Structures are given as C-alpha cells and as structure tokens.
Image (cartoon, rainbow, N blue to C red; front, side, top):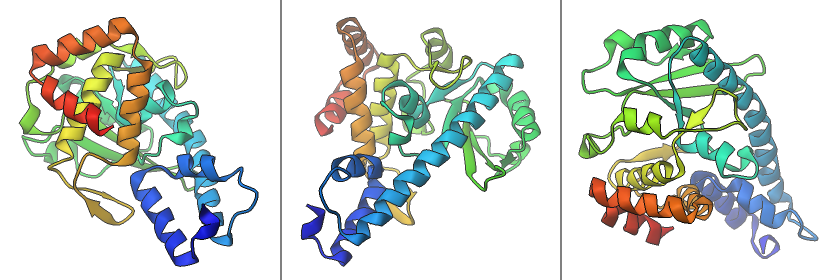
Length: 263
C-alpha cells in the first residue's frame, strides 16, 4: 500500500514505474484507495499529462496516416501505437514516446517529403543515412508544446540478427484496420503482432534501451510483457493456430515460447 511507504521509497517506486511504462496501470490500482500520501500527486499528474499527450498524438498520427494514404504510401502502424488503439481499453494506458510506421523501401523519399511538409524534422537527412540503416526518426513540436515523434521503418525489424524472418509484402497482405486511430490506419494481424512483439522481446535482451534517463538491457520491461498478455488474450482459436504454424515455419517457435513464459 502506498501509505506504508516513506516518501523516498515512494518516489523511487514511481520512477521505476515510469521506466517500466506502467504508471497508468499503477494509478488505476491506487486511485480508489481511501487515502494517498502527498507524493502520489506526482503519479496522478504524470497520468493526466499522458492522457493529454495521447489526445494530441492520436490526432497528429491520424493526420499523418491520412496524408500517407492519400499519397498512396502504404504504411503499417507497429508496436506501441498500434497496440494502444487495438488491444488496450484506453490508448493512454499504453505508454510510449513515439509511433512506429513501416513503409516499403521504395516509398522512403515520398514519405520523407510528406512528413517534412507536415512540419516534422528528421534527426538526420535521408540521404545521409548509412546503407545498413533501416529507419529514420522524425520529430515535431505542436502548438501546445507536445513533442510528437515518428520512427519510420522500411524493414520489419531493425536488427541484422533477424533479417529475412519476414517479408514486408506478407505483413501488408495480412494487415488489419485500426479504426480507433484512423480510417486510414492499418496494423499487423494479431498473429503477426504477437510474433513481432516476441521478436522485439528477443532483440531487447541484447540491445540497450534508454528511458527516463536510465539505460537498461532486457526484454522483460513490464509494459512489453503486458503487450504480450493483451495480445494473447485477444487471439481467437483460429488465430492461435495460425500463430503457432507461422512461428514454426519461421523457425522462431522456441523464442516465442520463451517470451510467452516471461509474460
């Protein structure tokens, strides 16, 4: 119970919750308690700020996706934003700092021009990227001061360790709409989304990530494990069979089994 914690311990817990991406989930558990210590105001404020950011980010991403669709750039929404609008009750429950979009490599130039036209700035020029690079980051501050980031990918996974596991064309063929985000929004099918989450879980066991100024290595970040749980709960029996068969055919069944056990 939060009332049993001193302020230093409580603030350390809240910092860890931010790193793990589960501030919203923690607040859902605590907000109905009869009394909360003053330091809990940090958590409630963070959750309110996240909800406000989500409202503006959802609008910004819907506009981007509509523009890409109008320009005939086929984009798939990946990872956090896709899951926020597909398997979470409230998108603000899925903490994240950006939106990941997957496009065909041949569409990089058009997508770059479109994003720049909407006020986004790439962290490096598209012509300055390395030959091995398969993504670019774009940023934009809106008029309220909210920062919106897009990671534009042209490969499903940003690690050479798993090159060739998927063809983008197959993912697009099986893509499903995400109407809660936009009429133009599409994401991975449920089996593909589960496999994608498992593969990123595996990548993060070896590749460091930085959140809230803290560097970590490991796939067991709580929000990522919650993604796996929610995806698993959303699978129909037919989709589960499809997931099992696809994992076996791609040679990643053991990896997916490990990720599932962690969740």
